[in-house]
Image (tube, rainbow, N blue to C red; front, top):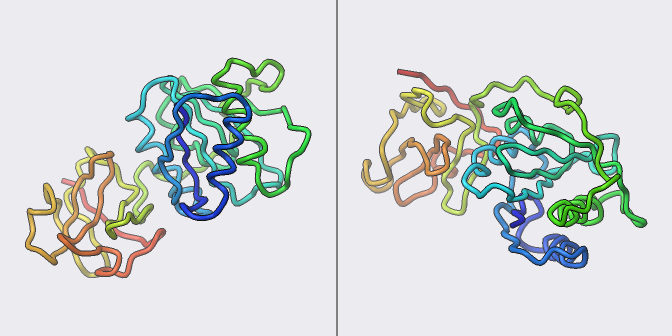
Length: 242
């Protein structure tokens, strides 16, 4: 299967064009729109989400990963394999958390270019065809193996004390990982100890909990945490451990 991880948005032509290109290049398997609303232009936040969500999918899944504010510039085009899963996208830090967690990850630079390549839509013109060819085992002379040291790397902490995503309900995911002994999270002047689930607090009250995908999340029972705390992607927070 191919999982689409993009900041394209649900509306407009972009997702449809990428899916059409995958079909035109011969891919006939499942295409799942995992994120169309990855944080726009925020590579760091998107890198956290991609690492948190990808492990739940079968091996040989391919994540077509396009959060690419430097499209058309000097950044390289990349394929990464980690945990038996494929990742195709720009070399701009989007795969930082993936390769950091897997010392056996492998990487290839995409040297191939289509006959027509727009300067602003490599997701459709370059990355989608490579995704289709990769799963068809048709990448001879299209990819060049490189060392992980040749990837663009960042020294972000393993646990990022920021909001990385706000979902449909107004729940605010952080870049803090579950299972790290985090006891409480402070948002502004409010300090919240970890709760188990929404109903652990009365309706309208805020809580912090470990979500189903391995991240610490801020929510309001039957309300919106983004409005309650005036949160957006990149909002800072503090935390303490046991």
